[in-house]
Length: 137
Image (cartoon, rainbow, N blue to C red; front, side):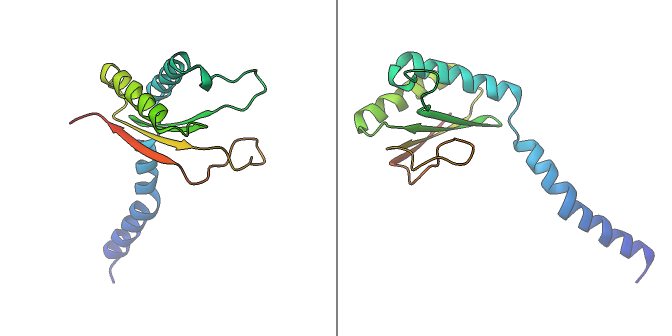
């Protein structure tokens, strides 16, 4: 085996095992704009649906978010009524039609949290309903 072939194999291994996963992760990382849009949507939902606002500052939240690049995962607790779920999805679709930077919003409805982790956040169980709201292409 020649030195050129060994160098080629080493570079391919570096790219496949080190560089490529790093660039994929970096490409999918949420940007400041994604986080800002996420906060705007959360505020919009809290203003529209007062039951999302905690009764006091120490009360656990009923809404959790996970911003991604051009996308958002939204976890909603305590919304078990299908009519309320449909109304929330309708408000999200309406908001998304005028705030087009989030291409996909994944909404998961949970009855209640199954407990807390060591850091205090809620641990999800199986969702009651999962809806994906996507902008038309």
